[in-house]
Length: 125
Image (tube, rainbow, N blue to C red; front, top):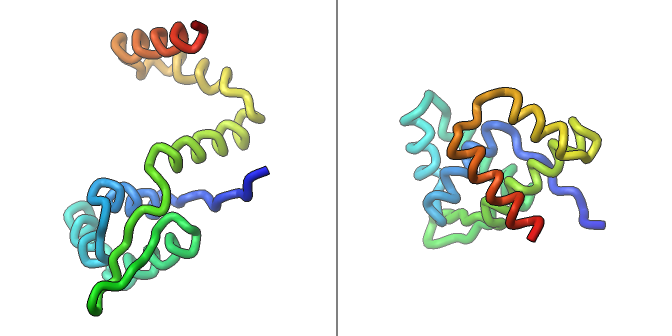
């Protein structure tokens, strides 16, 4: 069994999305991107990125006097793990109730439903 990876908080995921989109980032890069959306302290971003490094979501290298951060895992792998953990925690490991909720919620567009149908057919083949 694989060791459990700590789940990302909402703010950690927001930082990871920025780092994934840039491939490499400094604390300043992430801080400035977050400032465009909301007020946040530079030291908060720095602390959160250190935590993400400790959680093994970020890799850190030093160039001159600056730390450069890179994603330790691809975005799709992290999101897949978060979805799996959610399904396990909320639906006792069964994805069927999640899909039913999505279908009943009526937020799926016709195009999204068609794509899901195509994916199911491909999986059955």
